[in-house]
Image 1 (cartoon, rainbow, N blue to C red):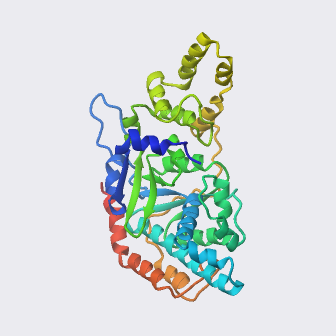
Image 2: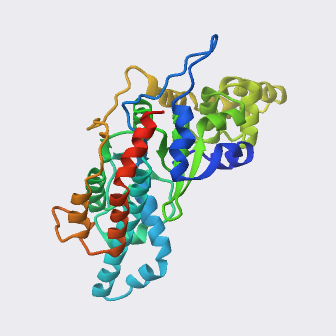
Image 3: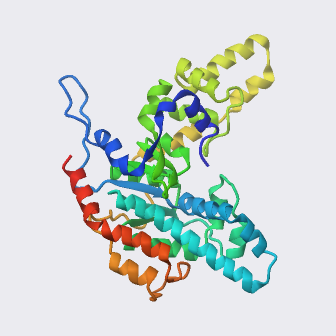
Length: 384
């Protein structure tokens, strides 16, 4: 998952592209990009934000749920290690506490987005395999960059209940069966999303305007990586950036062994594309008769990776989604949320067992009290 050492390169060469900001400032931070001033004479026309579309973010569902599980697991590592060797009854108690913490974390982060005027588009790859055992899930929760392994940590019931929660809170769930980068990027472009919420930097390859990482809902902070500012700092265009990611190594290619990190950027800046970079090295190795390296250059596969990356804009690209309805400009159904989450009604919830949780009630009360402010924030955005 992601692009090999890209974050290191961004921190070194494009630190202005990375901003730690309050989520409450996020819409204001991006509004000028979504609503550019009219083009002056001789300038290219810039497409303005569609005022009929609510300001929104696209959430990478697998990474969102996995990161929640991992964060809670790390916070309570000692408890869960103990649970594995205790009696079943005690392990079950710890398991229920674990579920409650996950529920709180998910609600906290989702409500932060909604409370600050952002609609949620939650995208999940349903081709993944789910976990069927909570204790196995706990043991498997470790740091991985493999999406398939991430999905194996996520229980089916957790995903199903998260879908219900998002629907109750006024968001939308889009289930896909294919490459998540393609699907999220396609939705992001179609709905003029402000950002994709994910730890996966590969979304930057597909012209995503920004990526939100490291959501700290308790403090209200997010880490924002802006594509335009990154490209400006790198002094390359989007197409050259795609070639850079191919050279660094990503989900679609192996790392080009002759160049690493900053050196790869230097060569892309100088030679503009992979073909000229390879041609440069071929000239060098022909002069010294290095047949091994010439063979490596001849066999280095990059065209297929480039084709896959460019497929998102191809006419024959199959956008395999089950549901495309965009989230409506509505207030979350908070009465239903109270009944299902805080009250005593089960109504199909399996992982988020209804419970009289003071923390959950506090979260929902906060959103309920700010309901009018929520609508006002969205109306202000539409008036920009």
